[in-house]
Length: 116
Image (cartoon, rainbow, N blue to C red; front, top):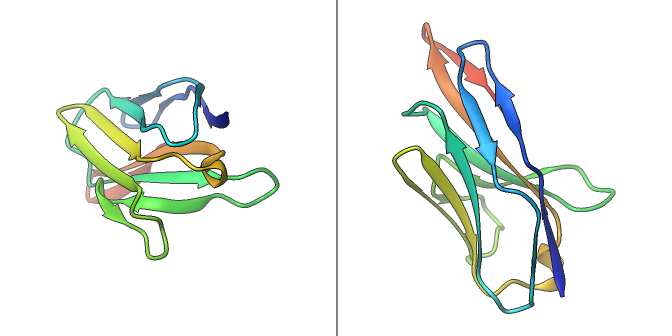
């Protein structure tokens, strides 16, 4: 089994935006898993996905909804539909065991606002 740990996150930015992320999942190696992050409002300026392995710093995986960070495996992809943003891992491997985070960047009075 590959342990994909997904934190349930519910944060509010000063703008009143809320993000809700799906909870922990355990998957079998080779399966496809989808991690969802639901927003209270849309659109966002940019929507990013990060992952963090044990004892390591978080790393950027997907930026601006569906752009893969350089060096990231093509097994990772991002998408969105309305208020739902999704990170999909195709053919999960042992090295994918990590905590995954969603992060939204929005504009508020022409300034970026960060949420987790």
